[in-house]
Image (cartoon, rainbow, N blue to C red; front, side, top):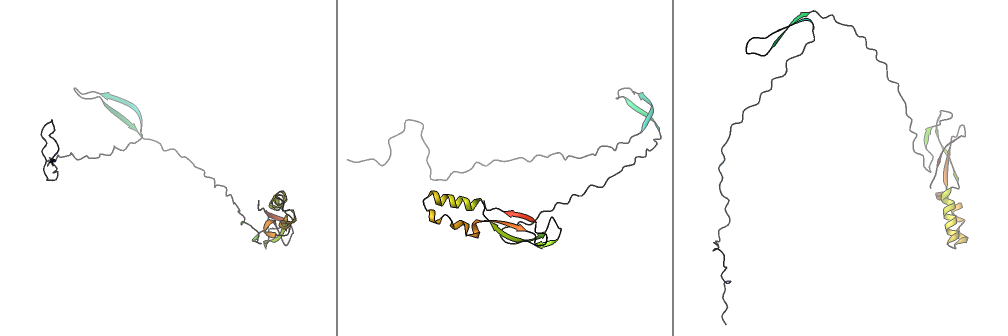
Length: 168
C-alpha cells in the first residue's frame, strides 16, 4: 500500500501557500499641518470706583461700557502677627537592661542610671510552665537568672525610680 504524502483535498477555496515570510503592507501617511496655539494672557484687572456708568451701543456692535473714574483712596490695614508658641518635646533615650545616660526628670541632673533586677511577669510565666510540664525541680531557675527579670533604672543622686524595662 502506497500512502500519499499530501493530505486529502479541502472542499473550500484554494489556499495559496508560499515559503515567503509575511510582508507588512506599506502604508503612506500624509503629514498635516497643525495650527500653532498662541497664549494671550488675560488683561490685568484694576479695581476702580465708578460713580457714573454710561452705556453706548454703536450700530451692529456689542454694547460698550464707559466708566468715569474717580481716584481711589488707599485704606490702611495693619496686620498683627503673633509668634507661634514653641513646644519642646523631650524624648528620653530608650533604656534597656544596661545602665543609660540621661537627664533625671526629678533632680534635673545628667546621670548614668543604676539598675536593679526584679522578678517580673516573664519569671512567673516560665516558673508556672515548668511546674505544669512536670519539671518542678527546675521551676525555681528563672528566679536566679537576671536575663529573665525586669530591670529598674534609678537616679544615683536622688534615688528616684526613672524607668522600668519589662521583658514581657
